[in-house]
Image (cartoon, rainbow, N blue to C red; front, side, top):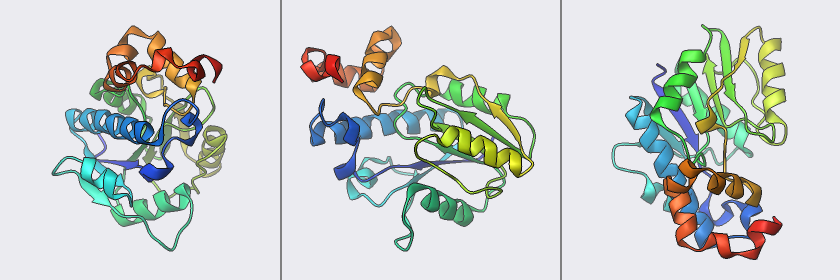
Length: 217
């Protein structure tokens, strides 16, 4: 198992902008904190070490004691550059970059992800329906430039192959759903397991199913 899981978390005042039609800023920030708690719990149960990458004091306050927090490099812009610098600072042979907004993340899903990974040099990815990169196990990190954003899944796979690394798309459904859009929220709440996870219970508790924007988004 890789020892280190790097979890980037955006500032809470910029949290989940594509959910602005559905949730208030405070609700979006609360959803981020709850989803982060789920991810951190899964990582800990899997016996891995979490490193939370953030500059936000509200995020820092939500991180349990004992979990390492790494600040961003103020001289750099963009998620990819920040992750590359963090990977350099960590200086590990295996690094799992994991999104913080995976409401159904479990320890078993993380174990399955690692079990499916080819030997080094390799990249193992979990991709959501929009073609992004929800999770990426790098063995080792630093072989190619990261390209988080629209279409990052294809970009990461192509760059890894060009760098001579084996590429594998892991089949781990619990890591495939992130919460970026109202459609993602509908998908979560259509799943009985999604309704009972921490994020699902929170969304139902604030009356999300009665909001017109849920059906329109």
